[in-house]
Image 1 (cartoon, rainbow, N blue to C red):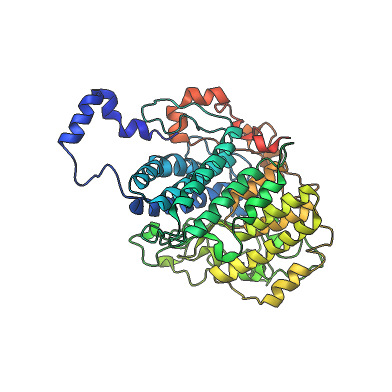
Image 2: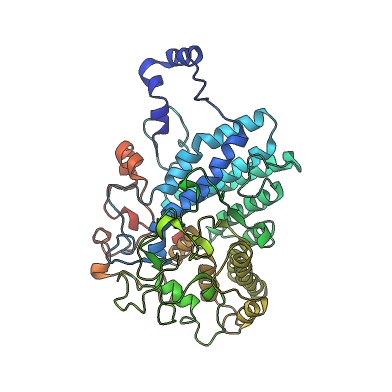
Length: 514
């Protein structure tokens, strides 16, 4: 864990509690307040929801094969990691540091001032953070996480975190009931614009996902997943999306994927992902209108993704354009001009955190597991349609599509067979999550144990020299804890869970097991 407790309270450890308290009271710093109002804290929490996922997308994306790099031998495409680096550690930092005591102080201050709506959204954000930490890292620090005076933090099992997520949501729901119809507009201009009813739906979505993590277990409760999905988002108007100020004080206020930020110059869509969009994986089906909406074709007019771990095409006419619209270019346009970009990649493109479509695919999975094909098929179709509606509502595309084109694709019997299959649910869910829902897509790949025979046909399993040498022939199942906190300050705790072993990132996570 990031040693915020050590850094902030170093004086307390050195000089003694009473002396530190005296100094703080005698010499208050008017430029460094010790607390902040909930209205001041919430914008940072929302901003970091985007930051945590988007930063780590550059590591998860190659593993899920959403993305591929224009050069070969990338550690993440090989299911590896970068030793001695914080790469892959931003979700950890987001939850323990950027959220951390900020969220807890927000809860305390809001309770003290009767601002129950802020209490509710703080618990919701904290639950969402715990969910992502568990999904991403497996074992993590739960019970001792926010104990200020600790120098070492013990790890807890992944399966202990999901019940805690559910408890956090229940705390949020209790606060929502006290908040009534109040609004959070002052502190929430870039997520739900203060709409507590939508925040509550988001909380129910977090709860549905936590219950869904039991999918491979004998105590999986599909009815609970369905119940909480139904209480969550009912249309794309409920989508949880972080928005950006079109005139931020500096470039870091823009979308992480934007040309102004220039973080994605050497990334392209992966071949596995592109083949789901361009019809290769669904031979004979109606054209997916999302293909031409999200992507530009290569010079020869066709749509290519980069094959796993092979770099860019040698043929210039095959090279796919970068996400800002230019082929054979590996950096952003001068000045961060985004006129060639579309969908998720413009300067102020919003960033989805959870969507109605995603919830519908969870419902479809749960109903399919339960044996209810009718509900599974209906939710599945709602998921595809909802994703297209999300794109056309919240984003601009290269080639617009009509509802007729949307429905022709959704109702095509190749896409929506009378008897649904689990493969179709997960592949269409993957498409709907492309470009933003990396954590959920990686959860699915791991809970299916990278089944390329029955589910993820076309996904490339790295092997031989294409597999990271530390893996001992195994695939990646978890992200290692953040280096600059855990591997420098919490070594003995890492040793207790095997995280000092070179192949720790290949240890199967709890939800991948029966």
